[in-house]
Image (cartoon, rainbow, N blue to C red):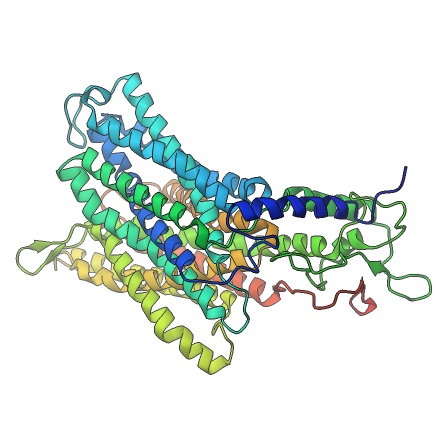
Amino acid sequence: MSPPPPGGSNGHRRHQQQQQAVSSMESGGDASGAARKRFTWKGPVIVLVFELLESIAFSGVALNLVVYLATVLHGSTAFNAAHVDTWNGTTFIVPVIGAFLADSYWGKYRTILASIVFYLVGLVLLTVSAAIPSLRPATACQMGEPCAPATKTQFSVFFAALYLTSVGTGGVKSALLPFGAEQYDDDADRPERKQAFFSWFFAAINLGIFVAGTLVSWLEQNVSWALGFGIGTACFFVAALAFVAGTPCYRVQMPTGSPLKDIIRVLVAAFRKRNVRMERDDGAAVLLHEDDANGDGEQLRLARTKGLRCLDKAAAIVDKAQEGQWSLCTVSEVEGVKILVRMLPIWVTCVLYAASLGQMTTTFIQQGMAMDTRLGVRFKVPVASLVSVEVVFMLLWVVLHDAAIIPAARWLTGRPGGLTQLQRMGVGRFLVVLALGTAALVERRRLRAIHGGSGPMSIAWQVPQFVLVAGSDVFCGIAQLEFFYGEAPAAMRSICSAFSFLALSLGFYVNSLVVTLVAAVTKRPGWLAPDLNAGHLDYYFWLWTIISVANLLLYMVLAARYTPKQVAAAVEPMRSSSSDE
């Protein structure tokens, strides 16, 4: 029996690539994946329109879910809170599963198609459950009123629809962004094309949230829930038709197999060779194993980088004839694992950043409720609408970001992208520090005004902190999308993009943990008293300012030490360098 080829998996990969060539041709690609298909704007535009309409559909359900459970299905406060939290958690966990399927088996295009089916069935069932009288209680209740709850059948139909929607949106969230980014050529002379796509994808998400939070939410609560859900369903149906119709325009990449297996192979091979020296007795460097070609499509060879030298041993060639796929890996496979290890600490700071940003939808709203909401003589600002106003500020920041700030940075630095992704993420973390500090100063002034007998301050004082939060979200949100997509190994782009959504979810859990600890430590009435005039919300804002400063400093250290992904230019076997041993 002949020994396996070096690396063990090259022959298998060639067979996979032949199969992928056929599959790629069937779905609009070519034998080399996405790289050879000529770029057109049609594909990205369809993806952006899809995301806008999908955001309207999803937010039309998510933003008013607790209200629907309370006023239509008559669930208790604890029941509603528990199920909303469970559904939100599921919605942000599912993208990780969808991303694994997209990167390993189905590919992004097919993952989106499968998710569309679940999504549409869920939205249609949700609309039907709100429209048919037998699928909901006969009477409606106001928030807080005691009413007979829905039957088990009514709850079952509603939650079945809700979780089908969750599965659908999870698949879309995991695959749509990297699929849209793949429509662009990796032309070093035009990086602004892909950079602009990330900006407008981010804007599409938030514009959808704004439309759903204003028009759709108003229709649901004041006209008909079925009409509101129906509008979201119609939006997504149009998005699905447009996406399918645009198939001939897309550049489709097929997966190369499970990236999880490659990660485990590298770790196992490195452990097996933990005693191998990277330098021979005669002083020559040990040969490192690499593929003979640069790969197809975006499966480019990665250059060896310094650091994490223990993993390099997985690519060290000791005895070609005896080594198989679990004892010898390529340099590119080793570097893919290094990238993930280096990205992990950056991702942890994203979780803490998301927790800081979460104050916008919790304590900022509570602060606004304790202020004078009148503007002029008759008009009163709904406090919850400030989140929608923040979306408007965000869209203005996106325009300023793309039209002025980034071009100015390109001119000053001579760099095609202007500021690097890590620099923009740092700016976002700095702006959230300013936003929380501003909120603390506003709250201190509000408390002094109340205790001094001057009366409540105008809610207009909150505008600066919302403007700063919007700017922070634009700088950091867009850059994070680019960073996790661009730095990820080509075979794990969906998974890494999904982890940016997971960071948002974990950020809310961190926020809840801090609230619980503050309530336990400060006792009653505490910083977060039921009556904010008797509490110290300003101290709570200062606490989050300190946490955000610490997170910013940690991020700056990690960003300064971060080694970016590097593509190998040479084809010949690479040798380890004794200078970095």
